[in-house]
Image (cartoon, rainbow, N blue to C red; front, side):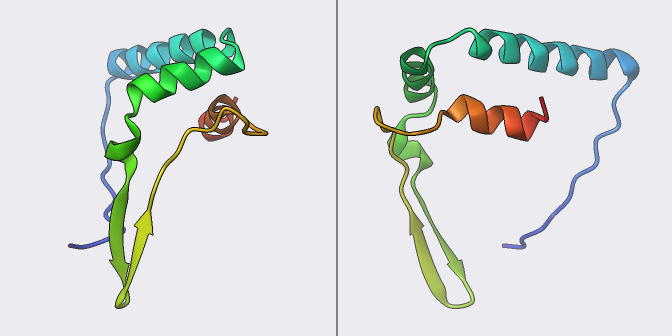
Length: 86
């Protein structure tokens, strides 16, 4: 398996606008949710067990487990906003 593969997508203006509209709709939907609604949304979207994985890097195996916390000091929405650049 090779890491650091980059794929370049050529989109028409129509395709780009479609994707941009989807992103904006999701942003609007998520920005109106409470912390509990966000947690529930992502719990249902991303079953924790499906987010767990192992990866070997230079002979060391790293195991990553994902958990949703009701007591978190930050929200997934804050992280998504950072990623989306809003």
